Length: 389
Ligand SMILES: NC(=O)c1ccc[n+]([C@@H]2O[C@H](COP(=O)([O-])OP(=O)(O)OC[C@H]3O[C@@H](n4cnc5c(N)ncnc54)[C@H](O)[C@@H]3O)[C@@H](O)[C@H]2O)c1
Image (cartoon, rainbow, N blue to C red; front, side, top):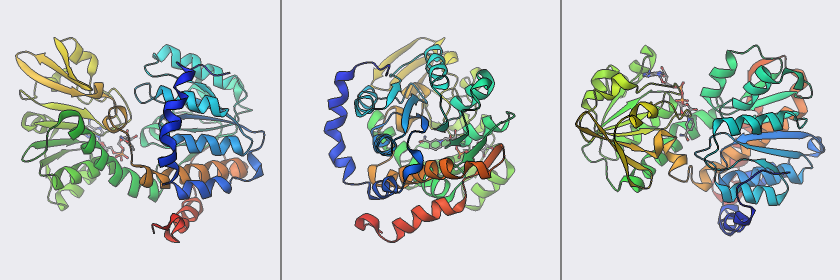
């Protein structure tokens, strides 16, 4: 039984699906390979409820799995997608703008629904089951996590089940995180602000794979890029590419645009806000909505100027926040393009199939999703499934 905002919105998502379906050949093949192992199993997805996740949910339903769907970030949940998934047969407990308390109730519901496998983004649901509902293990057997933020969080727990890290595989890190996020962060930046990056001083905070892609795409769009990262290896990497590396306070003093991509909360806190020059635009690409301390900003006078663009007056300076500090490309944009994300959803489905079939071979704790899974997907792509190799 779903809990969603408005079932009648399913038609909005349905109208958009034919074009998506024409551009996801790898996901379509991965869906046919799920096999009989999923029949009757209970699988929970805690994901961005974005249209591109519909084929994943449909594939699980077609394989006979009972499919529970939760939102991993209330800023990225699309109500029409929740409605469509529910109409398709999934049990969805999510709507746009849910409070944390409502998300807690949703997760308690899913934990109590006999969930056996989890595939999620951000680690929230696995953490909640392990910490708050340990009597639900079993039936919970295994979990799969898609982000570095989620893996860091789960690594701090004493995990009673195997958790497969599919953030660390090459397709996810090297192609998705490294290239697609940067591309789409700036695409969304331009559509929200109607500004270019020409000759703008852009500070990228956090130079992991995501930050690297953001910095590189900014440079190709005409920005003057500076980078700040706490990790000296990452600093060195940036220097070898000719990117200016400075300490965070200096980066903020110079920045006309700041993008955070650290996966940590409170990176831009009250003290950092005081360093930013008049007119500075702030955006976040990391998984957490708290990288920029939005509560600290909201203590100052503010107004909404356009969709996803707010102005704050902070001690006489005007600062601008995009997408309320949530992941810019997903909260204010459309995330990744359909054809490119095909690789990611194909990998997700193949990973779920692997987890269900093989989890008993793995002891409790975190395991990088074995290379054979991504190699199967990459081989499909390289062989030209869908004609675009
Ligand atoms: N927007 C998207 O669509 C999208 C897609 C994939 C991943 N992500 C998220 O982006 C974030 C970054 O991912 P990643 O794979 O690059 O992570 P990562 O852990 O490899 O890199 C993060 C970097 O931030 C640095 N850092 C941490 N705290 C810092 C601070 N206070 N100041 C400066 N640097 C700091 C770390 O040293 C590290 O090098 C994660 O939260 C991830 O979940 C977002």
